[in-house]
Length: 120
Image (tube, rainbow, N blue to C red):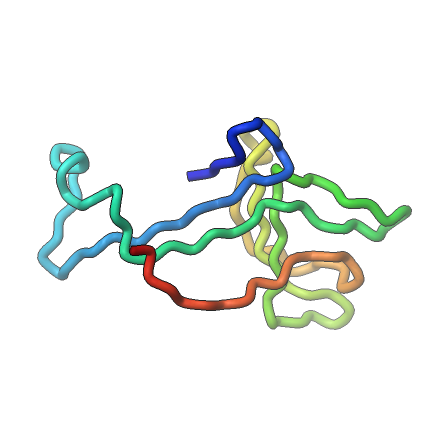
């Protein structure tokens, strides 16, 4: 789910990824999707800001705020680094989640600090 503030601000979007309880015997189907889990009560959530990034080629600027997030990984490729890119706006061909191996290391991408918490 991608959600923003109630005032329509495109600069405060967040990607929310939720995990729900399941066992090895759990079976999610089209027929039971409405009742298979307690959808209002996830057991874990991760919230990722969709805040764009600072692009340094030609001129420094914050770009794609509210529509794209670029997170650094720990993998370095010479003068580049790997990033995870998530884009939620644009034409159908431009909406994606992917690993990108050639991020310029001086660009200002996000760092994901990991902290596990229970949602309820």
